[in-house]
Image 1 (cartoon, rainbow, N blue to C red):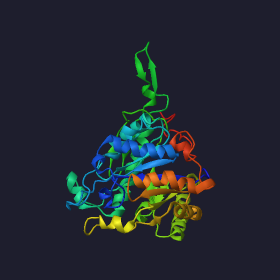
Image 2: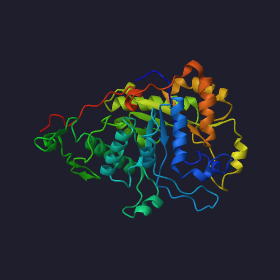
Image 3: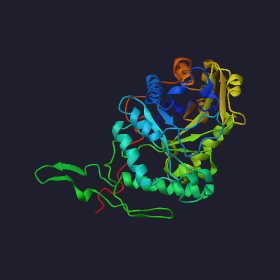
Image 4: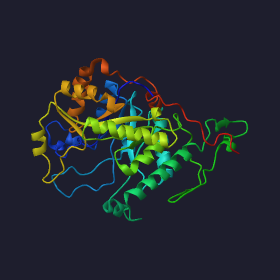
Length: 369
């Protein structure tokens, strides 16, 4: 794993704060346009950040007319951005609770093709009955069951990614064979939640396995992250708590038989650089939750840079979460990164796996006949 401080940014809506869409300069009129998302990712790429985390969920929007309603599909946004914004990782959230793993494997592999190896995937679970009712296929489950299902879904997705060997495409015109059928594999998965035969209809992608990003601050998710995650996102109220959580995750990764040094832990830091939190809170709908979900910095760029340097021992890097967009991202790029000085260097060129020091995984079916 690289010793470089990794920096990511979370992009979603007008920012994490529920009042952000009403802030002057929020681009509320453009939230559902491609231009809005292209501009945000271009800014992050210009700065040399490792990746953008694109939020998504199936949680129905509030009925409050003052709340921001509606959202776009994160994987589709990433696919729109990928061919025209080079040089940054694209990690959409895609939930697994009500989504078939076959569809997810195909969507993320396709994103890896159109981004030339810069795709990642943040699996998430859908917890509420309201989300279950949107689909009407099953009731909401408890967290233990949700994460067991998530682990199984990830397992299926990874198997489907490997169901084509790297050299399965032969494009042999004289014989008329496009693929070598001996190098396509049925996954024949049968588990508690899924039975999937396979193979995928999408070839093995440039990274083979786009990096998997999982939350590590939900106790029920830790075992899943320990088994599958290349990058673990955490949130904690203090730097000390973050350090303890990171140690727990590293221990869980080791207990699962993996090398903890091969897993990167990123700490979420909510940011409002140069803004007025009281003004932002006043714009939130009545009763909206405006409380921090972990570390939050409200103040100048130098203060945030000092916080990040001081928290370096507690994480391998940070996911900066602007409370308001696009102003929050602009401040990070134009003020915070220069204030970090030698403590941070831009991400190198290459695939997302290469940015995090991850090797290309061996195909689990290679040589199996």
